[in-house]
Amino acid sequence: MTNYRRSDIAGASYFFTVNLADRLQSLLTDHIALLRSAFEYTRERHPFIVDAIVILPEHIHAIWTLPEDDSDFALRWRLIKTVFSRGLPHGEHRSESRQSKGERGIWQRRYWEHLIRDEADFARHVDYIHINPLKHGLVSRVADWPHSSFHRYVQAEILPMDWAGDVGVKLECGERRNLD
Image (cartoon, rainbow, N blue to C red; front, side, top):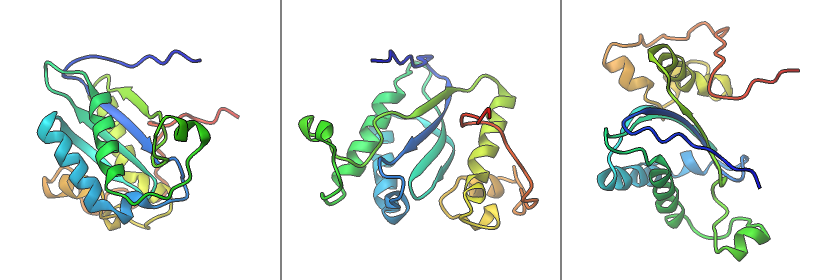
């Protein structure tokens, strides 16, 4: 078994990619109110700042900043996933392994986490988050995707409404690069 190492720096900012187990589903956008409720429930009990986020049909990208005395993002994701899953009807495919552990088949077990190193790294990941619906062909303009902190950035006058209007924008962060 692989020994996964996670960062544990209190008060740090982290980039995450969290996926559904079935990448053909659209549960996250189909049940956006439930997902928002799961985030609110978790933030009330274990505060954190959502610096940037995009909710796509089958995955989430987000940057969180944790409190100065706290590094436990795993607890927060576990709670968000649990609250969201409990609100959905049963019936999804579950492997024998998941069945034996009493697990639902909603989420991938693991997720991608990256410790934000500096302001430039933060900015690259925010851009990656906001351009993701365009990258996946869900919209022709970033501004057209409703489930994104992009709109908050526009309202705060950090980004213009027509940001990334040039579809040729290519950002290399947040995901593994194909080295072929």
